[in-house]
Length: 132
Ligand code: I3S
Image (cartoon, rainbow, N blue to C red; front, side, top):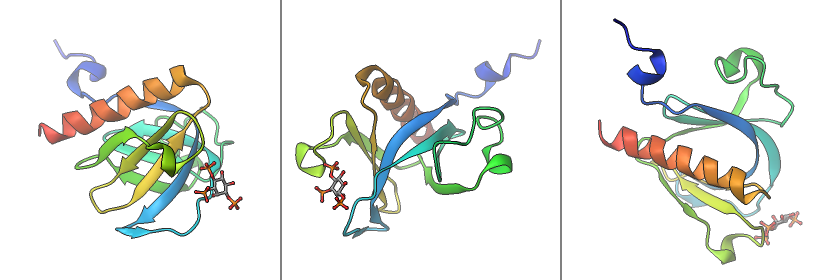
């Protein structure tokens, strides 16, 4: 009678390699962008960026912290997500994620299809948390 876990939790799990850079830290704008490709995991209302893109998918989705140290973790509760305005980056397909504590990240992928699935997943994560 127990429903499968994916029906019990509304969490949308997703993982892959994205380009990202932090642009603000707790309300303070950072001077320089440092883009890097990073293994990125969305799970349980938290988006985690790992240090590099090499953390493999093996176990990386379920228990990332066992395999690699996260560089940034972003609580999606109270966060906002939008397509970054052109003056934020010359890159295409750039998302801007602002956390409730005033940190900001740009997230980018050359593939519009791939960035769109991240857009949906993160936006849905934010929306589900705001309903609690
Ligand atoms: O906002 P900016 O200064 O045009 O951002 C660029 C810089 O972060 C640049 O680093 P250097 O100043 O070390 O070259 C990056 O390489 C660029 O990617 C940044 O611009 P884009 O438009 O790619 O976000």
